[in-house]
Image 1 (cartoon, rainbow, N blue to C red):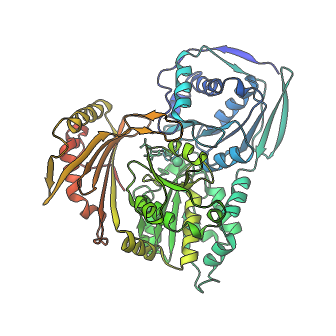
Image 2: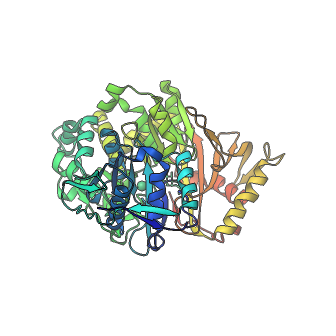
Length: 558
Ligand code: VG1
Ligand code: CO
């Protein structure tokens, strides 16, 4: 087959955000839009691309198969030697990371807009992961972006058509070079790895009741996203759960109309099912399988910042960490500082990085980091270089199997020992961009002005004195790269924090995120919304958020 060189012109705005390029499907459907971005990803790898192997897969959303087909043709056109493609294009984000690492490929292309809704009127996304299995760091995504602004042509082998619905190997000759597409089982490598990491027989006996008598009844919700086949294989085939223990396990192109984001708002029906049913545990995962929500009996909610802290304190329940040892811990800046207290107690390093999983990779590669998380329902370890929803659920079940405690008891014990970081996040989704940008500028000026540090702010009978305020910047301790302007922080004398940032994953307008974190040593049984009310009021006053967004209530509260 021959390679054609197609002339093209740049599109504006192909700048990857927190996690890849995410746009409406219709944006990707514009002539050469997707081709330009794929070619730019390959070009950013320079000479290494010729003769390389790449992993390709995504979360099953609308447009996946068409884009896989384009990646096959453009890879062939650019001298890639081999692609490992998930059957029907299906691979969860953590599975891509696992496969890149296992087969030591140059990297992978992940086709997902994660938790954003799918379907022809919704979102699609393309992300490049490097040879460590993690999302490309800023330097690489900046290179990709720069290439998209000057692209003049792309190379494509149009004659190559390769079925991806069956497992198998296809080889082609492309201008005297051999090009191979290996269609792989979407779940096998990942499931094999989970069986190495966890004690499956122990989790199985927990679920079946042979350990404590009564079966431990779980409800696992894939939200019509990519984790369906993984959940079936692990929970039903391996761990002996029944079909009644799993729900929404068929990946759908539009996620059945659901917003596949595992939180109390968008996974409300799982919460209801666990509340009203005889369940000891519920978990939900997002569209691409890297996020998780954990709830206990009666839908007792585990806030992700606490989930991270609890797991940090119980890593000895997971065989993987017995062999690797436990290195440090890390969290993203807006994540509540509960894990910091565990790190201090067990004498481990703790890192605070900007929002986005790409910032954890260097620390893991350097052997400094074992477990990390984000408040946005992301939890994971150095077993891969992405957050991993199903891993988090299996980690929790390991803790439960080892401690013989309920989810709620585990949290109560944790708070009794460490105190509690109350946390909440308010999201104001799809606001007008200009006023939100203005709000952030005005707020940054105000909080960095002389006199702001030391000023007091009162609401609902509480007064807070500012100790530090800035626009968070981070220097990577491994390669010294600096990431500026990662979110406005106001930290008060008592350790309470207000954080404000604009989302980098939306596909239209601006989404404002307001994060509130406040520590209580002994008053640990309260309701987060009640406990945090004064601080929320203070945040709304200082930011004038309601004026700028025109919203008097958030879209989502977690
Ligand atoms: C959000 C979360 C962030 C997460 C990112 C990708 O980013 O806040 O913590 O890493 O999504 O998650 P932002 O910029 O919208 O706040 V996923 O599951 O969409 O890959
Ligand atoms: Co995701």
